[in-house]
Image 1 (cartoon, one colour):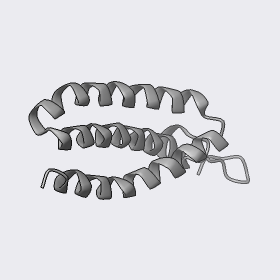
Image 2 (cartoon, one colour):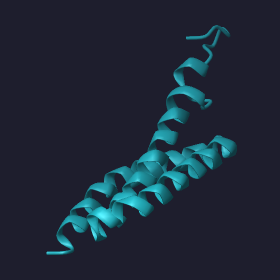
Image 3 (cartoon, rainbow, N blue to C red):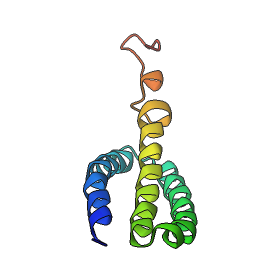
Image 4 (cartoon, one colour):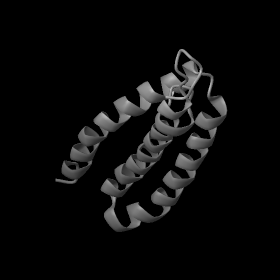
Length: 101
């Protein structure tokens, strides 16, 4: 019974983790190391906060929730890179004629 909720959370996190790992690989390929580093630092701070608070209330599930906080913040960093700041973001793409799309 104690492992039921953590195992469900771990299963759900697999979808998030896949997107995070692919997205961070793209960030490395684009050379966006500073943004990747900052995203990881913010995610680590969020994870540490979650690990200080959630396990006290939710036990083992709280530890897994902390892991979810970590990877959700990392996913937000990937999303920002892909949609706003990265070289492949639509607003940064330049058409063949040199004008923004």
